[in-house]
Image (cartoon, rainbow over the protein chains, first blue to last red):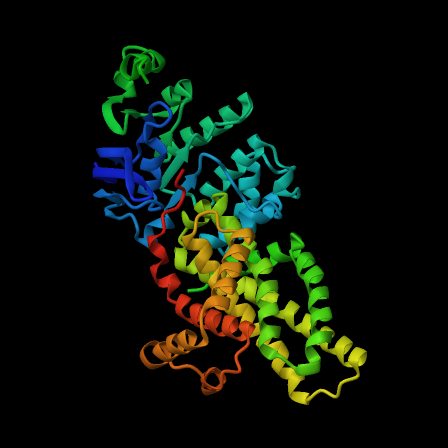
Length: 240
Length: 235
């Protein structure tokens, strides 16, 4: 199978006033194949978001290599094929929902059919009625939907999701789940950071457990003999 | 190299978030200052005042995208940090320049009628142009500093400005001359008029400040080249 993500020997430590703090990511290696929905699990502070930011090129690793679609992750060409939903969505509040999606569509270089793509996306993420309202008036759940929308405008082949259901009501959670499942059916690759184990279990094809900056176990969800929650407690333990 | 979408968005941001309002308030101070200044036309002090206005105007807009993480979703698209930086700066400069020209010309009209001074026709062109140049330079300084200093804000800018101002008051003229001569000879040739003003020791405090900032700004243009080393999204 083709590797869409290939991470080898990745390490990252943060330093303050020249002093190095503990490693945030310690010699992490993994691969994600085309069409996989890869769940990245672990307690708070395990290094999941740092790993994701390293993959997106927002942070520079101390050591290791990251390849997306077989190319270095700082290659601008691959950005057109990816989507990213951050953990804490922050957008230009002076724009309306529709204007914000238009702006992000332009960043992707979408010119033809921009109106149609944005209009369909507003429907897909359930913000059709609120499209004319300023982002500053949006609730946390609406921002999360908008965040999902900006990441899907280019119909990405690889989607990075960092806690995409945070702050969503049950209907919102189901909507996001359906979007992920739809993309899975289309053979897209998804990297999912989440604490919502029940959701991860429903959508992921494979999961990795991260603890204290290292990946300690990887499982195919189809081969699990117990619930992900039980497995999480067993692997991560109580001494988090 | 320039992202049209970011330039357009920045202009929209400046207009919709009414960031021109504080500029308007400060401009009242400028008008009052000009009334006093014009008795002995002091272009340097005038430029210094424009710097102060530009500080308030530009720092916030460049900094806000970096501070709250809005930049992350932008840079996950096919947009480099350099592209983001230059486009943002261009957006700020285009709106800022228009405001400064309007402000300067209004100030000149009010001043000329208030103090009843016969002004050289050149003044009508020189001052708005000086304002725009000062604004562009300061926008570049602000943008570069916002990039390198975490949490850089209007307050930081004013503190830095005060430190620089304070430092200039204690630096002897000879030292300033030596620095300028060194930069002129080995790094960047200075305009002759600028060098002459130093040599003649007629340099006011604000003049030193203006020239120092001019040099810092010119050197800061190399900022975007190394900006890709900045780490984003760090908690």
